[in-house]
Structures are given as structure tokens and as C-alpha cells.
Length: 240
Image (cartoon, rainbow, N blue to C red):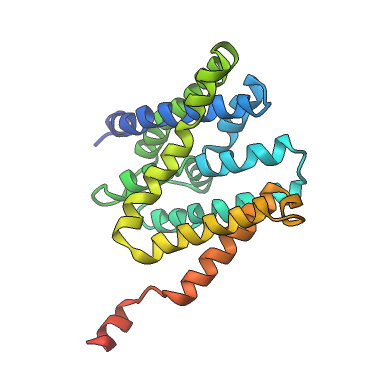
């Protein structure tokens, strides 16, 4: 496959991701403007991050005047999975993918891009990967712009209703896995309960939202990693 065909195939494979990102980023744009950010600020956040969970967690920290440390640690914990996905994807990269290419490609190595790239047969080259990340990136940025602009134009009641769509997205992500796995369901409920404790308990409610996200994520994941460890292949063989 020549480079042009490879690039076009990447664009074609990225189109479904692009369309999905339009809807999600549209909701983020409305949510960000509704919390006090400008259209330009919402757009810049999406163009320089490309991470739905991280961006959603960052906006309240930014709006409330949280510290850079709070923001950085929250992003590190929430987006840590991307480093693992990048390490995994690096095993499939062809020789054409140089160091500079790896940095650029990893910037848009989202869950969906990772899944599509990993599903390709054999090694993947830089032209395919550049095509694969191009349309999702444009969809994420353009959707944010549309949502942020709509948040400035639409009546507050409609903007608020549409802003709830991004929370629906996270519910849609968690529920399927929670239905298949009891530990995941319990971990999600435990994390939600911790968040409620911080929200409604005097003194604890004064803790900045960014640190609350960090504490809930670390405590819940640690507790359930210890209580329900994932068995490796060696453990399964021993169990037999």
C-alpha cells in the first residue's frame, strides 16, 4: 500500500470516531461555557488536550481558581491509561514512525484511535496513523466550537439540558462494564459514595473539587485492586 492510499485509509477509518467525537465535544463545549469559560477558552482546551474525562475534570478546577498542582495531579491520574496504551501501540509501529512522529501521534492516541490502530493487521506506518488521528482531532475541536457557541446563543434551559449529555456519556461507558463485572460496579458505587461524603460533609466540602477527584479515584481503585486482584495467566494455571 503506497503512502497516499495508507493516509486515505487512515482518514476513512477515523471518520466514525470523528462523528462520535462531534457529539461528545459538543456537550463539553456547552458544559464549559455554562461553567464560565469563554468560547475561545473551551476551544483551546479541546485543541490542546483531546481527553473527555480530563477536560471535564479540569474545567471546575480552572473556574474555581484551583492550583496548577491540583490540576496537574488530577490530569495525571485520570489520563494515566494513555501512557499504557501508547506503550502497547508502540509494538505495532512500523519503521517509518520516527521519534517526532511518535510524539505527535501519541497526542491523539485516544481509546478509540488505539482500538482501531491495534486492530490493524501487521505493522502500521506513520501515514496511516496521521490519517487516523486527523479526522477525530478535527471532529473533537469543531464539536467543541459548535457546542461552546451554542451555549452562548441557546436559552439557558436548553443549554443546561444539553450539557447533561456529557455526563450521560460517562454513564454509558461505565454501565456496560459494570453489568459484566461485579467489582467494577462496586468500585463505581464506592467512588460515588466517597464523592457524596466529600460533597455533603462539613469541612470536607471545603476541599477543592480537583483534590476530591484525585482522592476518590486513588482510594477506590486501590481498595478494589487489593480486594479483587486481576488474575494473570500463571494464577489461572495454578488454580487449575
